[in-house]
Image (cartoon, rainbow, N blue to C red):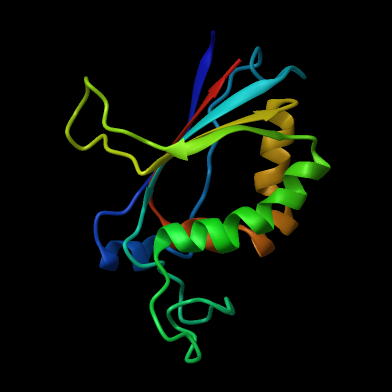
Length: 160
């Protein structure tokens, strides 16, 4: 099974998060064999921020910067209540399927730092579908801010 490392987003501090918040990106590093029109599976390892970090210009109704919000929104809550619902119609339009999503448990082997909150496995019809999705204006407008605000770190790997 071929594997392509797609991205690692890491923020070690709130200050660092604020510096990189305006330029979050998922980058691809695929070879020509991987870009064929064949199904791929993306393994997502997620570590949430204690508090979702939205820029002060955010229009999110539940963002910590919204004056009507009574409590700060956790990263996990932002991911599940804002990111996932905004992503679902886009995934449906691509016939992408969520295969598995659940709590991640510490591994028996690996660095101490490799502790994740949740793990997901998603099937896309092709690498091109995934690349088109994350590059689309719709994804950038409706989803990206919630993903960036909610995640402290993310690793996503493609598997054929």
